Image 1 (cartoon, one colour):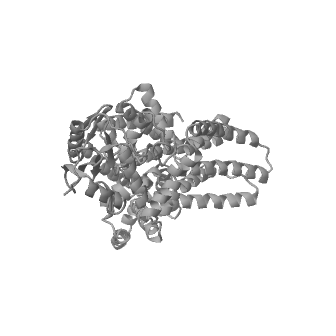
Image 2 (cartoon, rainbow, N blue to C red; image 1 turned 135 degrees about the vertical axis):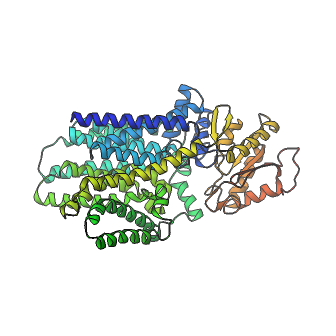
Image 3 (tube, rainbow, N blue to C red; image 1 turned 90 degrees about the vertical axis):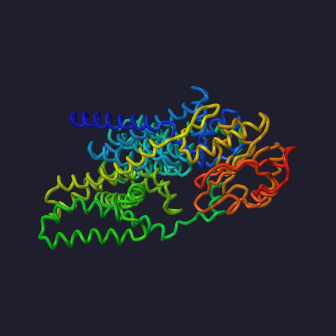
Length: 593
């Protein structure tokens, strides 16, 4: 036990040093000036300026993340560095809790593998799907609360201490207040836990303090929810919240643009990559056994691996080329198999009048939660959102590679050299992880340009920073302090750096908002009422969807016909155009070229 504790401390120290070095290299380079992460820059300051989410601007998620950030700003100062520091601390907390949770299922070195894959493949990205500056901090907050929930429930089962259940109850409440799909999963898991404990107590005729367990879990949960709801609904109505937040608004967005694509073909896409994961594990574990056979058998075996891999990856590039982006993302599919195994064992145990072993219960909780948070991916097909399901699934993936698959192969005499097999598998994981990590670090070490404003600095790549700074300079030179500016479609950071607050309830003029001509005319009327002087339009698009082409066509047509193009900055990667509206006396109603 002491040896394992020393290993734990050594592993955490190594990862802590690596993480600190990465933060030093990448500081202030995580946020993007456009897209969803731009909103995460601006929204806490919007709240600090007296605006309320849902009432004054649309917000798709729960209130916890933006108000927590605003509270930090109020406490430590209105500087971006405060939000950067909070993001670094949260990602460090996720790493620590993930390791603690992995240790409930795995030995120290496999748990270190969980951290390594998570860090190199998911956490460090310089895009809206990274952990240090995600598309929404509601996502990373929810990941942390979900890990705390699982750790608390598993620790309660091993220690019997009720404070762990209280911790789980708080984690459920915070999940509800943060992001609805994670809140749904957390509530469902809490219900499964309590229902399972009650049914088992009754089936096995045991006397356990079930009511104490229920109260320890529910009282803190309901208390936190009640406080949060009281604070929220003292300022806004439920109807206002439902109009703005997920799922009402998000469903409207998806329906307006055909985002529902959870078809069998996308599930097969995930299954192909999941099969490639299994193929890689099998290849690494079985290679020593294949090589120990006669040469024709070895050649046939290797040909089967290569041919199978190419067949499964026929619509993508070769496995290793795509692996850093996709190879771990469909891993959540493994959790459905784990859940089936646990339910099978549960049925057998109940028939025999026995209790389910704690280890099986722990795996059941992990698998149930992982399957619940995978619901969004199953509805809409694969996307990079699976990076936020990854931490839970990685524990099962590493268990498959390090425990279950080797044990199954050894029972069939196909693992004569287990240490060599494990070394080959570790080499595969290490190679792919380092390949991805080196690529990420190189991107952060590339030249960056400082974009500064009243509250701090973002370091962005030149193709984004240069046109952005030119547009900022034009607005600073020509707009007065009382002039209003609208930035679209997803340029909320422009308000932050220009010092001009958003005047529309839509902080993002993105698909799903202003879906018909009447709503777009209403937005124009609101801009007229607020005397908006400039409209800043970027070339940002979501995939093939473009502002003025695939959504808000009427609003874009009005901008082109009734507003005057006064600035055009950028490059093929990113372009910003500034239009002066007819609401300003000096504006000339000439169509933009």
